[in-house]
Amino acid sequence: MCMHPRFLGTLLLSVALLCIVEGRVHYYDFVLKEANFTRLCSTKSMLVVNDSFPGPTIRVQKGDTVYVNVQNQGDYGVTIHWHGVHQPRNPWSDGPEYITQCPIEPGANFTYEVIFSDEEGTLWWHAHSDWTRSSVHGAIVVMPLNETGFPFPEPDEEEIIILGSWYVDDDVNEVVAEALEDGSDLPRSDCYTINGQPGDFFACSNETTHRWQVEYGKTYLLRMVNAAMNAELYFAIAEHSLIVVGMDGSYVKPIVTDFIMICPGQTMDMLVTANQSHGRFYMAARQYDSVRPDVTDYDKSNVTAILEYKGDYTPPARPIFPSKLPTYEDLVSAVYFSSRIKSLANSDHPIDVPVNITTRMYITAEMNTITFVNDTGDETSGLGSSLNNVSWVNPSTDVLLAYYRNMSGLYTEDFPDFPPFFFDFVGEDLPDNVAATTQGTRVKVLEYNEEVEIVFQGTNVNYASEDHPMHMHGYSFYIVGTGFGNFDNETDPKEYNLLDPPKVNTVSLPKKGWVAIRFKASNPGVWFWHCHMDRHLSWGMNTVMIVKDGGTPETSIREPPSYMPPCNYASKIKLRPFHHTVGDVERLAMQFEGQLDKRKRGR
Ligand SMILES: [Cu+2]
Image 1 (cartoon, helix red, strand yellow):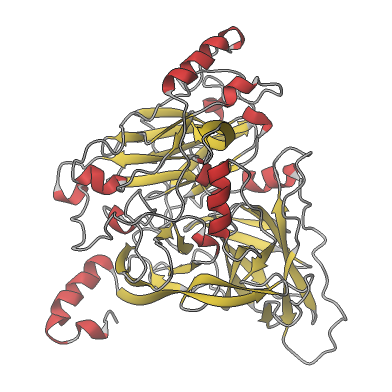
Image 2 (cartoon, helix red, strand yellow):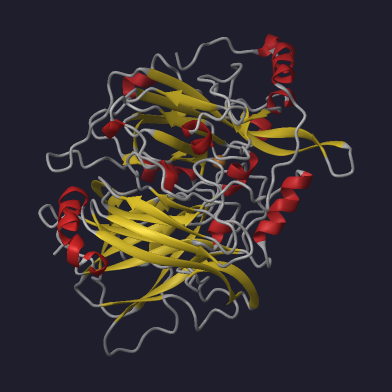
């Protein structure tokens, strides 16, 4: 029955009509407030939703609409993003700060209208301002319509597992702000968490370890979110295999596996059958670290939770640890797992891969050095990152409003389709001068319904090749190809998978490799593209795509809501000033000419 009490009475007829068109309507209240949490024997206050970490789960059925009233009772401006929800024609409620809105100020409210369309499975929501998402996040469950149901035997029950990062520091945003100001490295987490808990490998965590009680013979749908700030994670359950059936709100061909690798931003649906006799089994996750081997100061914690069988038995002294959980630098396992993921691609769940490409882009993802003047007036250099040598800078008014209201001077429509110069991007001994980058607020403009192919190219610039989980707002896209080395635009496209490529909203660009994605620009709006490692996002590994209106009301951005948070609040974190210009990079390219690899890539 499609009904909500608020609409009973005279509005019943219009609600009935709304339901036919858009599914049911739900209302949630999110109160953002500081609360105390104790982990690793230390207590701190942090911003959370409705006093809980992780925050509340949103439950909908495919095609529903959710209104979330966010009341900011915290101390600084915040926005919330509905990760993986395509929000057709509705960028106003997408959430990234300074991209589609300005922050909700302390004391203010803002109601998001979250419009579900073709998504089905597990997604999530998180803060999209500063590093606040470390404590402000939760799951979204999208149930299938009754008529179609799951494309696998209906599970008996479900379990939601959210992987997160824990920082002992009182205020991780302060630490980030200081590091961005002086150009130093950004903080590393002190441990990972499963449903907010580090597990009993850590002091003061025995009593609080997350426990999942199962009944022998039942099959569970395990809905997993990687909400960790900066880590791809391996996950496994001792003595239990996993059957991956969905990813990023789309179904995949079932994969039977002993472990998964999930990158930040990704969600995964898995079937787990409780087929062991009684016992207790660790579920464990640890970082898959793709940076070079001599960089060893990453978070090596093993986060655990306990799967325990209900019943009358004497449990072992200690649960069994998953022996198949890969180790930190096991690249082969990560690549092997990712290579197995394919779309369901059947008549009930067809695919629609663009084949008449009208826009091709070749985008390098780089870790850079940025020269700037520090607080004391000295020129110094610090860490940065970029896409096609443009390190993103947020405008003072969000790009969406600037675009919709035709305001000038806030961004330029010249994000490049290709890197400014070509060289052996994955080379081992790249000269330092390729590490310099420009900063800018440069967006890519796409006509409505363009068929787009983007090849992302990982680089070893600054001796810093690593995986980059690239995430697009407003869309899911198909992963049609991936490989190691420099992309070859003659041979590599011949190997593309156009038959059953996975449809996702986040893809891990492999270290010293490339990935090719395709989508049809059928959702008009202003949509953020960024690396979902917050370290890289803070350093500028982002850009924005504006998809123009299609000429009719049904193909155009919706009217803005009557209230949007005003852009008069100074965000707590600001990017530091910067002194390179485009001319500097051209000069560097000239110096570098002799070593340039002339092979044309992309097109
Ligand atoms: Cu990255």
